[in-house]
Image 1 (cartoon, rainbow, N blue to C red):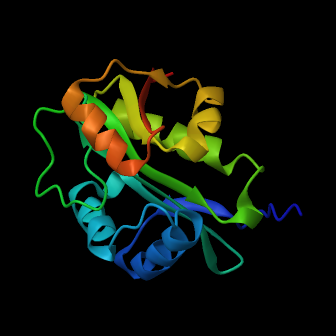
Image 2 (cartoon, rainbow, N blue to C red):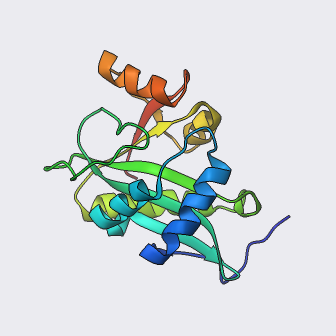
Length: 171
């Protein structure tokens, strides 16, 4: 079903979106639960990296991203406290779309917006942790695996046995 509509847009996330973001995350990523506090903190720390996809009056997707440094993923469902300074890359914490919003280019639009945010912060690399379910999607978007330390491998294993740290240069 194609539900692409002219009124479906990516916009800056607001605190009013957080309950909807948490509910969508629980539906889309049931094996990777995160508390609302995680999303609220990322929104507070990097509001320009947190977007909501809205259409027909409902939230149908979100992007959580922020400045980051190094090749250690933030552990799942863990507060950061603060962003690292100086940052050296832009980290995509989560990109999720409701099933009816998939296959219409909204994910690619979100990645482009993450690139815009990275450029605005003078950062030339996008990085993310991919779960086993999304590895093929991220590979199609040009992301490749990073060499990882034993510490990073332990963090990745807390997601799932096939999770991988991926990066790509900002286009």
